[in-house]
Image (cartoon, rainbow, N blue to C red):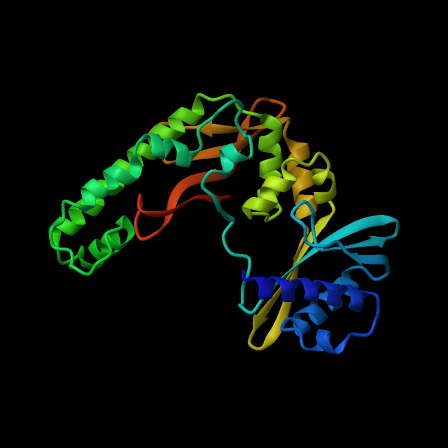
Length: 308
């Protein structure tokens, strides 16, 4: 999301506050791209909570949960508004920073991040050696691994050598991922930070800066249990608003388990975040997959894909 779009969204949140407070909108408000979304979301909130007071905008710094706060019969409710011009804006569970497990101290001590581990394995060097086995690149092709891999991907159905190289990179990259997860499995885990990380993912908080700021907060989970998400999506030229009480969902999960940990299995490129109940049973809550988003596995944009 660009700077101007973020500013437009923040102004839209403030418009919702005005509408909930029955205040007049300015000329600038009436020109906001998300105006109809704000009207529909405000209408839905008023329907869900018929008598609210003390409505205020919470700001948009990274350490803040939600966008809007109000009181409802003595209880604070926190709302986050998500607006989209698409029919559905919820998307996948999460796609987050490649080093999120270590940057956010889910493991104790000086644990190597995935990127640090790859550097020690000289990942980019061995990938380039494989790519350079192909001798038919165009002379004007940039010589970085991304462009070479993209070229091979384009012709892999017609060129056996191109397909073999990409396949070998994928296989070696898979082994490297498995080695990293084996390394992580031997590290000391920090259950409280795993609990906080799980909470953030459940709440739909995926941005690196936001996760880093909140996971260090001692009171965000208390606030988070008051959070309701309102989605405004465009469908057939109409704004469709739905809501999700993620705060209550989080509260149920946290109360169900004694603690949380990450389980590892051999020969796979994922690990599982599990809850451990009072009887010692492990219940899988999230699956975390080491992944490359672009071109091919091992080539560009490493990340963590997270699934229920």
